[in-house]
Image (cartoon, rainbow, N blue to C red; front, side, top):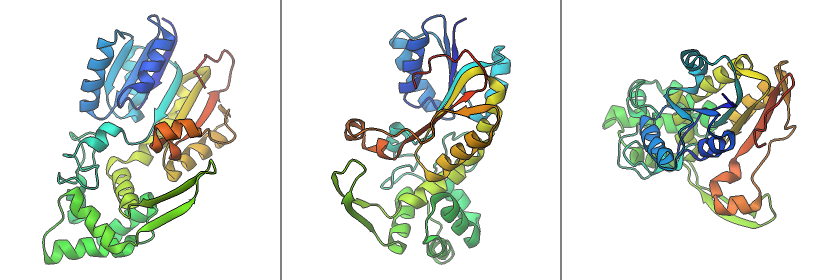
Length: 294
C-alpha cells in the first residue's frame, strides 16, 4: 500500500478528494465524520468521481486509534483536521445551525448521540449556561443572556428553535458594527450578528469539540509515522490556542508553522469564511516526510 492519510473532518469532501487524488490508487484516505448525512452525500459524490481509495468512518475523529486498529493500520503518513462548520450544515435548516432557522435548536453533528441544545438549555442552571457562552463563545454578555433564557423557561415556556435563541441573544447584546480596513488593507464595513458568539459557544459545548480536539492531538504522535505531519485548520481562537500550545509543548512534534498560515486575499474573496481560518502544521520527529501539500 502507498501513503495513508486521515481526514478527520470529511464534510463536503474537498480535502478528502484532493488527498485521494494525490496518493493515487495505491494510497488510502481514511475519512471521518460524525454526521452520517455528510458521509452518505459525500461518499456518493466521490464514488461518482471515480475515487475508490477512501474508507469512510462514521465516528468522532477522537476515536482514530480504534479505527486504525480495526483496519489493521499501525500508523499513517498524515492527519488533517478542518474544524470549521461546513456549508452543508449551515444550510440544513432543520438542525438549528442557521440563526434564522425555525427548526429545533439541535446543533449536534451526530444526532444519534448526546442531547440537542434546546434540551440542555431546559435543565442547565443559569450559571452553567452563562459559563458555557463565556468560556466557549467568549460572549461578554453571557450573564444577561443566561438570565433571559431561564426567565423564558420559567415564566413562558422553554425555547425550542434556533430563531428563538437568536432573538433572545440579540435583545441582550448590542450589535457590533465594524468599520475598518481588513488584513489586506481593504475597506471592510460589516455588521456582526450579535448571536454569533453564543451560537458558536453553545455548539462547541453540545458537541464537546474542544475535548475531541485535545484528545486527537494528544494521541496523534502515536499514530503518525516519523516524518509524517499533523495539520489543523481552525476558525475559533480557543481552538487555535489549543493547537498552538500542544504543537509547541509536544516533544515528538516539530512545528513547521511558527505563525499560522492564513488565506490570501484572492481566496477570501472567493470564500469569505476563509478570513478567520488558521492553519498550523507539525511534523512527527523522524525522517522520510511525505508530501502533504503544505
